[in-house]
Length: 219
Image (cartoon, rainbow, N blue to C red):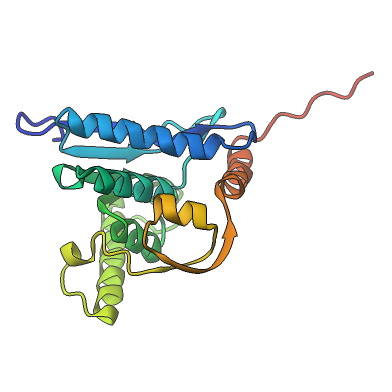
C-alpha cells in the first residue's frame, strides 16, 4: 500500500561495493544521504532504506549507520519532518537492534531475514505443524514489542513516538568521525572503530554469505 495517491514512497539501496578499498563505506553513506535529500525534495513522504539488493559484489551498509546518517542529514537540512524512514534490513534480530533503529529515527522496521529464517525453520519442522507459520511470526513480533515496552519503561518513556529519534544511548568504541556523521550528539567517551573498520567487519560477514570458490590447484 505504499503506492497511495496521496503518498510517494522511494527506496534507497543501502549497500556499498566490496573490495576493501579505504573510504568506500563513507562514500556510500554520503551517497544514500544525497539520495534521501533528493527524494524528500521531490515530495516522497516515505523513504524505504533497504539492503535487499546486497549481492556477491555489494555488501549491506549496517542499518543503524544508514538510518542515523540519513536522519541527521535531513535534520541538518530542515527536511526531516517531511518524511518517514522505514528500514528493510537483514541485520535486525534482537530487541536492542529495533530499539536503536527507532531511537535514531526509524518509524518502522521490516526484519525480512528474521522472517525468512522463521519460515525456513517452520518448513523444516522445527516448530511442529500444530500452528501456522504466520502464528510463529506473530509470536516473534509480540516478543519484540514487549521487549521495546520494557526498554521504554526503564527510562520513563510512555509512547513509541516519544522514543523515536530520542537517541538515548551512549556509543562505546566508535570513532568520533562516525559519531559526528551518523549519530550526532551521542555521548562517546571511548573512541574506537571508524568507517573503514566497520566496512572490514561487514565484509567478513559478506564473505561468509558469498564464499569465493577455491581455484583448482595448478598441475
